[in-house]
Amino acid sequence: MFEQFPKTRPALPEEIARIYVSWYRENREGGSAAASAAQAVESWLHRQVAADLRPGASGLSTLELGAGTLNQLGFEPPCGPYDIVEPFAELFRDSPALARVRHVHADIREVPAEARYDRITSSAVLEHLCDLPEVLARSCLLLAEGGTFRASIPSEGTWVWYLSWRLSTGLEFWLRHRLDYGRIMRHEHVNTAREIEEVLRYFFGEVSMKVFGLSRGISLFQHFACAQPRRDRAHAYLHG
Image (cartoon, rainbow, N blue to C red; front, side, top):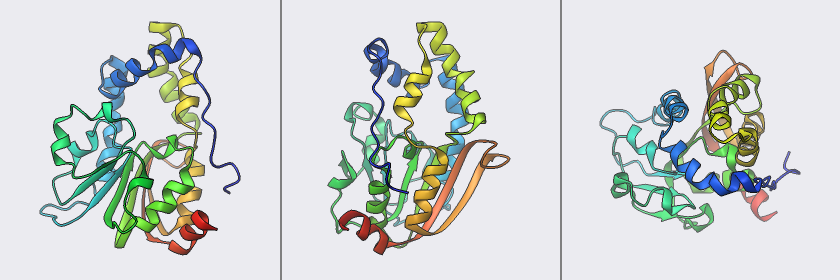
């Protein structure tokens, strides 16, 4: 299962690399028609991650992986300490939501080994991780007793997901720049939904799943709620 990890991210061609940073920020902030429409649909991802928070919940510590522009916080009521892992500080530096964040880490390896979280979350992040098993193994060790790992992902690797981006953001990108958006997708999304689920089920004893669609193969998004971390497997992967 793990022979392919860590993966190597495909490089962007020079003509796309020149505009990538400005395009990425615009896309994350809904700065175009296609990006704005995508954000509306992608709210499902964020709502599922926050679905475990009941009204009046308090004292729950959270670690968000790949926090980006901190848009997940718009879906989560304050319920306790909130830490983030995000390597690109320029994404959240000017966000008003930063006031709710306790600790910022550029990498999950920076999180103190003795830290424990009731919730470890991610929204549209796991598909990007070249070192996916390591991140999930470390998440196992950071999860508090009775805690949950909650992750929403696009259904990468399915025809529904392919058509959704090809006919929306991909078409808009082509019309504006005459460049292939597929090169960006291959650069960003290094893991398929099936690969992510396999690794989650290896490291967690209890995994429940929901889809935004009819099934795994006919869906836009998937959400996983994971419990019972298999810490023995996590230790073996990290130190074996």
